Image 1 (cartoon, one colour):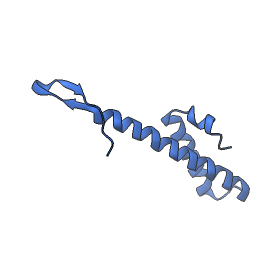
Image 2 (tube, helix red, strand yellow; image 1 turned 30 degrees about the vertical axis):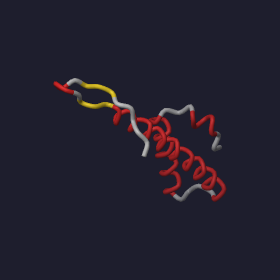
Image 3 (cartoon, rainbow, N blue to C red; image 1 turned 90 degrees about the vertical axis):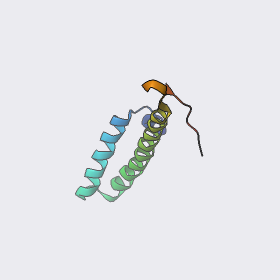
Length: 80
């Protein structure tokens, strides 16, 4: 159920929607133990995918700078 290829193909919004559904299911307490463990594993993978997508977007935004006379430019992101 935690197929990495399946998760990698998801957009941020799709992954987040699935993650929200998983959280709701786990919070309900109605799932059997084995199912809960399976969906928890998928949820952890979805969380990591969402975090990676957010980090990539953050790096893109950080590259945008305001230059002289209000011109918008791009600056390479540095990793420290």
